[in-house]
Amino acid sequence: MLAANSAVQRPIDAKLLVVDSQRNLIHVPRTAFVEFLRPNDLVIANDAATLPASLSGIHQLTGKPVEVRLAGRRSLNPMDVKSFSAIVFGEGDFHLRTEDRPQPPTLQPGDTLVLGPLRATVEAQLGHRRLVSLLFDGTPDQIWAGLASHGRPIQYSHMQTSLELWDVWTRIAGPPVAFEPPSASFILDWHVLSNIREHHAAFATITHAAGISSTGDESLDHLLPFDEPYHIPEATAQAVERTRRLSGRVIAVGTTVVRALEAAATDDGHLRSGDGVAKGKIGPATRLRVVDAILSGTHEPGTSHYELLRAFLEDSTLKRATDELIAHDYKTHEFGDSVLIL
Image (cartoon, rainbow, N blue to C red; front, side, top):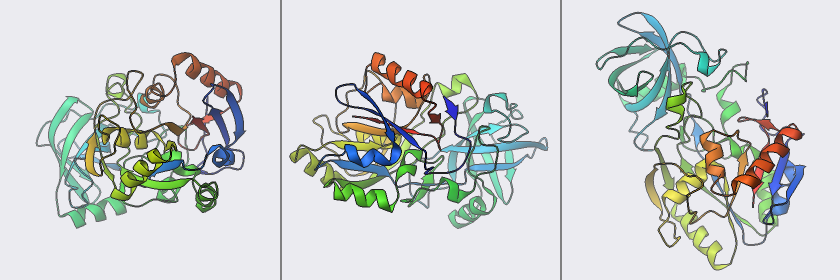
């Protein structure tokens, strides 16, 4: 598939491939998404705003340059911002392909990374020389201020112009907890939300700390997605129950919503509200208990996002869909086209 290389959330030529319940493949403009909704359906999106999670700096002991990409945290509590897991690269920036980025200097517990106005101590290596846990100095307010003034959105070489925060915040962005944008929600704007209600469907949100999509190392990428904290509002849990009673469908906007909802599900399919952490992988062996359908970006085979789609479709149909995406020049990555699996 082609890489979308322009930071436009809703291009006028955006495409949508729909896989309906009979396994038919239908090509429509992405704006036609709402036409596939039924009365009593519930559309759920991730309202996480994206952190400026890329921090350039130096490894104090050697003076060598590094780039730190924050990759995980324990909770969504805004006061809990001292400790992060992170991917660390050596010299360079997003203009170089992630898999071609040099390794960082050897990092040992106790090493200090100077990241603009922020200082962080390496607490431990997490099984790989690029993956570490970091403890930031300062108060939560100081850490937030340092992220805001020095951090940049994480980005990759397919996007050669620098991204700004407004490029990666969705229209429904709320708490700044995502490490990369929950980009399936780029399709949403106030017109789409209004159309959802005009189709007698409902809309709700969850908050999920969407993680990074690539580490540049095959063995690390195999571990993705990392554990990710989430919050399910009581109103969303009630909306799911109401949808079930009315025989509607729960439609997740993006893989992060699937992870949160399924992590919060009971064995009999009820949705628990409150805070939690989504752990493990969703794939072909997963029995989905809450989510009936997914609106997602286009994902390439072998990625963790593609593996999640295997929970919705058998491999033969997913391969047919992938072949269609390639044949019709669908674009992939965060500003690309979309698929709707019903």
